[in-house]
Image 1 (cartoon, helix red, strand yellow):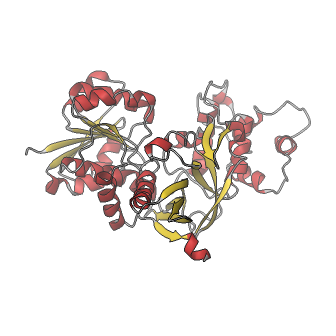
Image 2 (cartoon, one colour; image 1 turned 135 degrees about the vertical axis):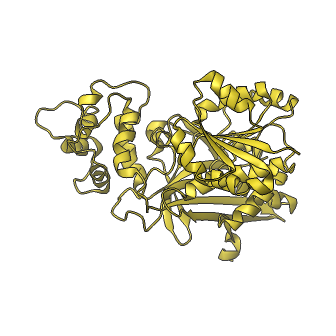
Image 3 (cartoon, helix red, strand yellow; image 1 turned 90 degrees about the vertical axis):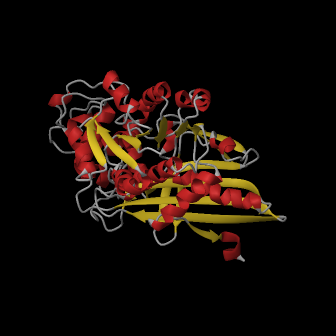
Length: 450
């Protein structure tokens, strides 16, 4: 068999572990890795001195060059923003190339299923951390429950990318950007849909960060979680047609959501229109544009009045620490509110070289077995090494890398648009992830209470 060519699109925050793994195993695996990024130097930095890798400039807007790069590959791994995946997928269909991503399956991506299947192509999506490891660890337990004769009643799952407890102790948010900042700023927009105790629930964006739930992670304490956009679509994927509760959500440290709710309620996370005079605006003026004019009342007073806040309360502390009250120029020529907010927050929320991030995941399974109702809780905590080899990069990149290796070795038979839900896919990926210190710890809650 000739040497395979793997094309990785994107050399950003989440790419380090993926690229390192595939370069390291290239000789034994008999493949070559090409890394493409809009900034060619970023791709070169990721490839380093490896003789098994090549760095190129890649811009999806340059159609001819994009087509040539994809045509030269056997497998494409896209770490581009999710909005670009369908364009990559169309080129993969045309040139008959396999595709792996860590992103949610959009309706457009789903529409490629039959054609990909007919062409004997695999378009593996949702094979990162969240989505990805969450699916695989959930299916591992649920398949075991069903194989033993049990029936699922309820499933809840929360995950989040945070900073390690020892990182930046003065940061009251306990948060920094560990993956695409834009996705974080606009997260939660759109109505969250889930089912709880047999009742369908819908939470509009303006209520999302007010309706949180607490999740306890042994050894790390309590976190707060808010609902993801669409938990309902996973009912059929997980084979949970009769389930009473199905809820997937995002974890943050306690206190995050009440402060973020203020920014959302003001309109700072709106990405639908460009703001005027951004190039002449300070941080303080940006925040003030979303509050009523008052020739006497200061910005802080208007905020406290509008949201019933205490001057020394946790919400004001977080906003103050973020620099939002400063008279510092924003430093952007133009932008939507969300883009401006991202730019301001990045000044404080950017990982410093020695910072370590933390990935947290938690599942709760309630099921019936032999006439009894039982409960399993499982959790995962992974810490990053530094600002490059982050827990987020490992969580996103390693499942993609392992899945790609398994596919090249002929161990994944799925075709069409797929997710890592079958035993042949999730078992070997999870087994190898354990060697990297990424694994769920299970506890049987019924036994604990007995």
